[in-house]
Image 1: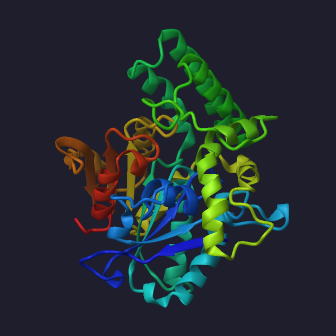
Image 2 (image 1 turned 180 degrees about the vertical axis):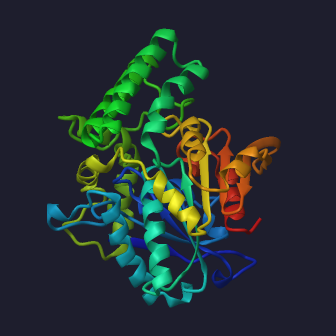
Length: 399
């Protein structure tokens, strides 16, 4: 399992006085050391130019390519790909146990897990196992909280709100809304019957219905079109390949593939000659297909009950994990603090990049908080870097 660590680079504080943030990408099969690092929050962008809104200025960053087979992580035999989040969490605990033993300077530094998309589903499961391991003393770290960004916590809540969300933003007409809702209901039925592989296939059908009715809306940001840049090729011989094309391939754009397998690979000097960055991404996605539509809302409830700080953040323009769906599963939590949380009014936040403009809203009660990030899609740090950085500081109690 491949990981990449940056020590915090702050002019006003040493890394010992700043938190350590582990970033988990989505997909599953998306590479944090590639996409999260060079497209979102790392010190350099894809053109290797300094990023003004890098999270490194306020935290040390640990990028991990997980599950195994993602990015520069690899497997030697196909039967060891993870097939569910329980295995993903178990694998990650092996890495974290080793990391905090070898890098014991981070044992007393506040440790946060930040995530995006399917990474949030994995982050929830990992956080629960890490909490148990810290209590048992098998992992020595100062786990301080988890942040779930545009996360696949309750997939069916997202699917059921796709139609209403697109309709409310004038991207569906009445007939289109009816077709999308019908497709979503088929997914709901499969989930209720615990037929999760079937639900994943029907999820793909629902996405196709949306594409046909919206002139190919971008699932990651409804106001943008997919870039014209050529994407690395994936087979399209079945619905899993189609889903990988939609949701893994955008994390492996040709220019990023060339960067990671070229200059970065050469600079690292330790990647096995037979391993290609992202070469096993589709296999990772396919192996997780049976677990894809399973919710992990119960795990979030367990985290809150255990006293873990949980933050949810979501982009206003995200379709694939729309905010309406996120609010549905949050409002369905068994957490005793929910009624008080719901009765609070949210607080507006100024956009650091546009003084005088509202950049976000947030609401917090006890160990739970929610950030509504405006003018951002699925990849919030890419769309609203300054606002994402401000949110990071608030979650890690630096603002």
